[in-house]
Every structure is written in C-alpha cells, then in structure tokens.
Length: 122
Image 1 (cartoon, rainbow, N blue to C red):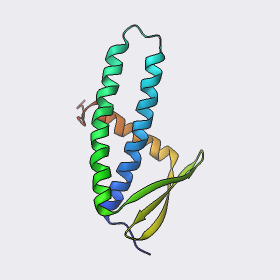
Image 2: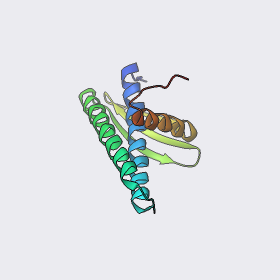
Image 3: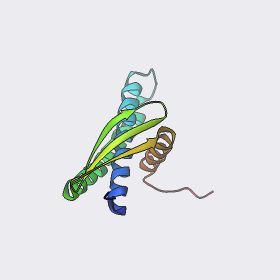
C-alpha cells in the first residue's frame, strides 16, 4: 500500500480545511446580508476580503495538487466522522477525519485569515 508523502498529506489537509472554511464564510456572508444590522458594510467587507484571500490560497493548493496528480473526494459524513477518498499516483486511499477536529482546525484557519496570520502577544 502506497503512502502519501508529507507534502501530499499537508496539501490534502489544507485543501479540506480551505474548502470547509470557504463554505462556512460564504454561509456567514449570506446570513449577514439578511441580518438586521445597523452597520453591515464593515462585516460584509471583512468577509469578502477574507474570502478573496482564501480563494487565492485555495487556487494555489489546487494547482499544486493537480501538478502532483492528487484528487480528493468527500464520500460520506455523519455527526462524528467525515470520510474522504484520495486519489494519488494510481492509488486510492480512504481517510476518516473526526468532525470536531475539522471544526477546530477550520475555526483556527478562519481566525488566521481574519488576522492575516498575526498572533497577538498578551
């Protein structure tokens, strides 16, 4: 059984997290557009700029995956796990991720996008 290289593993995880973050931010943007807020514009602008940066990261990730011959497909998900099929170098690999772990990682990814990856020192 072939294994993914470290770079391929990082690309797979990055792709999954970026796709999930994109879906979350797009859903949030739709909700904010419908919300009765007095000052929607700053929130909308923040989300749109974040989605733009996320899209650029996702483009680079997809481009690199295509160069390496990597494809990822979501197979099934329930309340506990999400199952992905990874196609690489003529092999097929199935990976299961714990949804709480994915949610925490997506949350961290979105926070990094909002702060441009800068960590505040307390």
